[in-house]
Image (cartoon, rainbow, N blue to C red; front, side, top):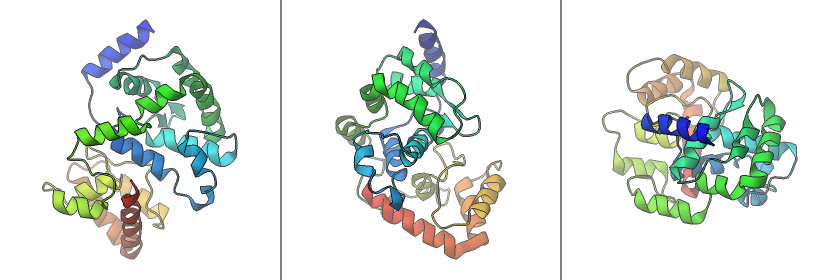
Length: 244
Protein backbone atom coordinates (compact mmCIF):
# COMPACT_ATOMS: atom_id res chain seq x y z
CA UNK A 1 0.00 0.00 0.00
CA UNK A 2 2.86 2.40 0.80
CA UNK A 3 4.43 1.77 -2.61
CA UNK A 4 1.12 2.56 -4.32
CA UNK A 5 0.83 5.83 -2.40
CA UNK A 6 4.32 6.89 -3.49
CA UNK A 7 3.53 6.05 -7.12
CA UNK A 8 0.22 7.89 -6.93
CA UNK A 9 1.81 11.00 -5.46
CA UNK A 10 4.36 11.05 -8.27
CA UNK A 11 1.79 10.47 -11.00
CA UNK A 12 -0.81 12.89 -9.71
CA UNK A 13 1.77 15.66 -9.61
CA UNK A 14 2.32 15.20 -13.34
CA UNK A 15 -1.29 14.38 -14.19
CA UNK A 16 -2.17 15.20 -17.78
CA UNK A 17 -5.05 14.41 -20.06
CA UNK A 18 -5.11 11.47 -22.44
CA UNK A 19 -7.29 8.41 -22.97
CA UNK A 20 -4.90 6.46 -20.80
CA UNK A 21 -5.42 8.70 -17.77
CA UNK A 22 -8.21 9.43 -15.27
CA UNK A 23 -11.66 9.11 -16.84
CA UNK A 24 -14.56 11.43 -16.12
CA UNK A 25 -18.25 10.52 -15.94
CA UNK A 26 -18.97 11.39 -19.57
CA UNK A 27 -16.10 9.27 -20.86
CA UNK A 28 -16.97 6.41 -18.52
CA UNK A 29 -20.61 6.47 -19.56
CA UNK A 30 -19.54 6.24 -23.21
CA UNK A 31 -17.47 3.15 -22.38
CA UNK A 32 -20.40 1.42 -20.66
CA UNK A 33 -22.91 2.27 -23.39
CA UNK A 34 -20.73 1.68 -26.45
CA UNK A 35 -19.68 -1.78 -25.28
CA UNK A 36 -23.37 -2.76 -25.11
CA UNK A 37 -24.30 -1.85 -28.69
CA UNK A 38 -23.99 -5.23 -30.38
CA UNK A 39 -27.55 -6.45 -31.11
CA UNK A 40 -26.61 -10.05 -30.26
CA UNK A 41 -25.94 -8.98 -26.66
CA UNK A 42 -29.43 -7.60 -26.00
CA UNK A 43 -30.37 -10.45 -23.65
CA UNK A 44 -27.28 -9.84 -21.49
CA UNK A 45 -27.40 -6.05 -21.30
CA UNK A 46 -29.85 -5.94 -18.34
CA UNK A 47 -27.38 -8.00 -16.30
CA UNK A 48 -24.37 -5.94 -17.37
CA UNK A 49 -26.15 -2.75 -16.34
CA UNK A 50 -26.40 -4.21 -12.85
CA UNK A 51 -22.72 -5.23 -12.95
CA UNK A 52 -23.66 -8.89 -13.07
CA UNK A 53 -21.13 -10.69 -15.25
CA UNK A 54 -21.96 -14.35 -15.99
CA UNK A 55 -19.09 -16.50 -17.18
CA UNK A 56 -19.86 -16.74 -20.89
CA UNK A 57 -17.99 -15.69 -24.03
CA UNK A 58 -20.01 -12.56 -24.77
CA UNK A 59 -19.73 -11.28 -21.21
CA UNK A 60 -16.02 -12.00 -21.17
CA UNK A 61 -15.57 -9.83 -24.26
CA UNK A 62 -17.83 -7.13 -22.82
CA UNK A 63 -15.59 -6.92 -19.75
CA UNK A 64 -12.51 -6.64 -21.98
CA UNK A 65 -14.20 -3.94 -24.08
CA UNK A 66 -15.16 -2.04 -20.95
CA UNK A 67 -11.67 -2.02 -19.42
CA UNK A 68 -10.19 -1.03 -22.79
CA UNK A 69 -12.53 1.91 -23.30
CA UNK A 70 -12.00 3.02 -19.72
CA UNK A 71 -8.30 3.25 -20.54
CA UNK A 72 -7.52 0.52 -18.03
CA UNK A 73 -6.48 -2.29 -20.40
CA UNK A 74 -3.77 -1.93 -23.04
CA UNK A 75 -4.48 -4.02 -26.12
CA UNK A 76 -0.91 -3.68 -27.38
CA UNK A 77 0.79 -4.98 -24.24
CA UNK A 78 -2.10 -7.34 -23.36
CA UNK A 79 -2.03 -6.11 -19.80
CA UNK A 80 -3.94 -3.91 -17.36
CA UNK A 81 -2.82 -0.34 -16.72
CA UNK A 82 -2.81 -0.83 -12.96
CA UNK A 83 -1.14 2.51 -12.31
CA UNK A 84 -4.00 4.27 -14.08
CA UNK A 85 -6.60 2.24 -12.26
CA UNK A 86 -4.88 3.31 -9.04
CA UNK A 87 -5.07 6.95 -10.12
CA UNK A 88 -8.76 6.53 -10.93
CA UNK A 89 -9.38 5.28 -7.40
CA UNK A 90 -7.37 8.15 -5.92
CA UNK A 91 -9.25 10.72 -8.02
CA UNK A 92 -12.45 9.65 -6.27
CA UNK A 93 -10.89 9.74 -2.82
CA UNK A 94 -10.69 5.96 -2.59
CA UNK A 95 -7.82 3.98 -1.14
CA UNK A 96 -6.00 1.79 -3.64
CA UNK A 97 -6.77 -1.79 -2.61
CA UNK A 98 -4.10 -4.46 -2.41
CA UNK A 99 -6.37 -6.60 -4.58
CA UNK A 100 -5.34 -4.49 -7.58
CA UNK A 101 -2.42 -6.91 -7.78
CA UNK A 102 -4.85 -9.53 -9.11
CA UNK A 103 -4.71 -7.60 -12.39
CA UNK A 104 -0.94 -7.84 -12.78
CA UNK A 105 0.62 -9.85 -15.59
CA UNK A 106 -0.29 -10.69 -19.17
CA UNK A 107 -3.98 -11.18 -20.02
CA UNK A 108 -4.42 -12.25 -23.63
CA UNK A 109 -7.97 -12.34 -24.90
CA UNK A 110 -11.42 -11.95 -23.42
CA UNK A 111 -11.34 -14.90 -21.03
CA UNK A 112 -8.00 -14.00 -19.47
CA UNK A 113 -9.14 -10.40 -18.91
CA UNK A 114 -12.44 -11.63 -17.47
CA UNK A 115 -10.78 -14.09 -15.09
CA UNK A 116 -8.45 -11.47 -13.64
CA UNK A 117 -11.29 -8.94 -13.46
CA UNK A 118 -13.63 -11.20 -11.52
CA UNK A 119 -11.03 -11.75 -8.81
CA UNK A 120 -10.80 -7.96 -8.46
CA UNK A 121 -14.57 -7.43 -8.65
CA UNK A 122 -15.31 -10.05 -6.02
CA UNK A 123 -13.90 -7.87 -3.24
CA UNK A 124 -13.89 -4.40 -4.85
CA UNK A 125 -17.05 -4.27 -6.95
CA UNK A 126 -18.63 -1.24 -5.27
CA UNK A 127 -15.33 0.63 -5.13
CA UNK A 128 -14.78 0.04 -8.86
CA UNK A 129 -18.27 1.35 -9.63
CA UNK A 130 -17.58 4.44 -7.54
CA UNK A 131 -14.17 5.01 -9.12
CA UNK A 132 -15.60 4.87 -12.64
CA UNK A 133 -18.86 6.78 -12.05
CA UNK A 134 -21.07 3.70 -12.35
CA UNK A 135 -23.50 4.92 -9.71
CA UNK A 136 -26.35 7.32 -10.45
CA UNK A 137 -25.31 9.65 -7.65
CA UNK A 138 -21.68 10.10 -8.72
CA UNK A 139 -22.60 10.33 -12.39
CA UNK A 140 -25.27 13.00 -11.89
CA UNK A 141 -23.05 14.95 -9.51
CA UNK A 142 -20.29 15.09 -12.11
CA UNK A 143 -22.56 16.16 -14.98
CA UNK A 144 -24.17 18.86 -12.84
CA UNK A 145 -20.73 20.22 -11.99
CA UNK A 146 -19.62 20.26 -15.66
CA UNK A 147 -22.31 22.05 -17.69
CA UNK A 148 -19.90 22.61 -20.61
CA UNK A 149 -19.87 18.85 -21.28
CA UNK A 150 -22.44 17.35 -23.63
CA UNK A 151 -25.35 16.42 -21.36
CA UNK A 152 -27.22 13.16 -21.61
CA UNK A 153 -30.03 13.42 -24.15
CA UNK A 154 -29.06 15.81 -26.97
CA UNK A 155 -27.38 14.47 -30.08
CA UNK A 156 -23.69 15.19 -30.53
CA UNK A 157 -24.46 17.16 -33.71
CA UNK A 158 -26.90 19.41 -31.84
CA UNK A 159 -24.53 20.01 -28.93
CA UNK A 160 -21.49 20.68 -31.12
CA UNK A 161 -23.40 23.06 -33.38
CA UNK A 162 -23.97 25.33 -30.39
CA UNK A 163 -20.55 24.74 -28.83
CA UNK A 164 -18.39 25.22 -31.93
CA UNK A 165 -15.01 23.73 -32.83
CA UNK A 166 -12.65 26.43 -31.58
CA UNK A 167 -10.83 26.72 -34.89
CA UNK A 168 -10.22 22.96 -35.30
CA UNK A 169 -12.88 21.61 -37.63
CA UNK A 170 -14.78 18.53 -36.41
CA UNK A 171 -12.93 18.61 -33.07
CA UNK A 172 -16.10 18.69 -30.97
CA UNK A 173 -17.98 15.93 -32.80
CA UNK A 174 -14.92 13.71 -33.27
CA UNK A 175 -14.13 13.99 -29.58
CA UNK A 176 -17.64 12.88 -28.59
CA UNK A 177 -17.63 10.20 -31.30
CA UNK A 178 -14.40 9.13 -29.49
CA UNK A 179 -12.28 9.25 -32.64
CA UNK A 180 -9.85 11.68 -31.00
CA UNK A 181 -9.20 12.28 -27.32
CA UNK A 182 -8.98 15.46 -25.28
CA UNK A 183 -5.32 15.89 -26.24
CA UNK A 184 -6.07 15.84 -29.98
CA UNK A 185 -4.66 12.31 -30.16
CA UNK A 186 -6.10 9.49 -32.23
CA UNK A 187 -8.09 6.89 -30.26
CA UNK A 188 -7.15 3.51 -31.76
CA UNK A 189 -10.03 1.32 -30.56
CA UNK A 190 -13.31 3.18 -31.17
CA UNK A 191 -15.79 2.09 -33.84
CA UNK A 192 -17.10 3.53 -37.08
CA UNK A 193 -20.02 1.16 -37.73
CA UNK A 194 -20.09 -0.11 -41.30
CA UNK A 195 -16.95 1.78 -42.33
CA UNK A 196 -14.17 -0.39 -43.87
CA UNK A 197 -11.83 -1.34 -41.03
CA UNK A 198 -8.75 -1.37 -43.25
CA UNK A 199 -9.42 2.19 -44.45
CA UNK A 200 -10.09 3.36 -40.88
CA UNK A 201 -6.82 1.84 -39.68
CA UNK A 202 -4.90 3.34 -42.61
CA UNK A 203 -6.26 6.82 -41.91
CA UNK A 204 -5.50 6.54 -38.20
CA UNK A 205 -1.92 5.57 -38.96
CA UNK A 206 -1.61 8.38 -41.48
CA UNK A 207 -2.93 11.09 -39.17
CA UNK A 208 -1.65 10.06 -35.74
CA UNK A 209 1.87 11.47 -36.23
CA UNK A 210 0.79 14.82 -37.71
CA UNK A 211 0.95 18.01 -35.67
CA UNK A 212 -2.11 19.84 -36.96
CA UNK A 213 -5.83 19.56 -36.30
CA UNK A 214 -6.16 15.78 -36.27
CA UNK A 215 -9.96 15.79 -36.32
CA UNK A 216 -10.00 17.73 -39.59
CA UNK A 217 -7.23 15.63 -41.12
CA UNK A 218 -8.88 12.39 -40.04
CA UNK A 219 -12.21 13.51 -41.49
CA UNK A 220 -10.59 14.37 -44.82
CA UNK A 221 -8.80 11.03 -45.00
CA UNK A 222 -11.88 9.00 -44.07
CA UNK A 223 -14.06 11.00 -46.44
CA UNK A 224 -11.65 10.57 -49.33
CA UNK A 225 -11.49 6.80 -48.77
CA UNK A 226 -15.26 6.23 -48.55
CA UNK A 227 -17.52 9.24 -47.96
CA UNK A 228 -20.87 7.40 -48.16
CA UNK A 229 -19.72 4.90 -45.53
CA UNK A 230 -18.36 7.72 -43.35
CA UNK A 231 -21.59 9.72 -43.57
CA UNK A 232 -23.61 6.64 -42.65
CA UNK A 233 -21.32 5.75 -39.72
CA UNK A 234 -21.34 9.26 -38.27
CA UNK A 235 -25.12 9.47 -38.59
CA UNK A 236 -25.46 6.18 -36.70
CA UNK A 237 -23.10 7.34 -33.94
CA UNK A 238 -24.99 10.63 -33.74
CA UNK A 239 -28.31 8.83 -33.33
CA UNK A 240 -26.84 6.59 -30.62
CA UNK A 241 -25.58 9.66 -28.76
CA UNK A 242 -29.13 10.57 -27.70
CA UNK A 243 -29.10 7.57 -25.37
CA UNK A 244 -26.48 8.89 -23.00
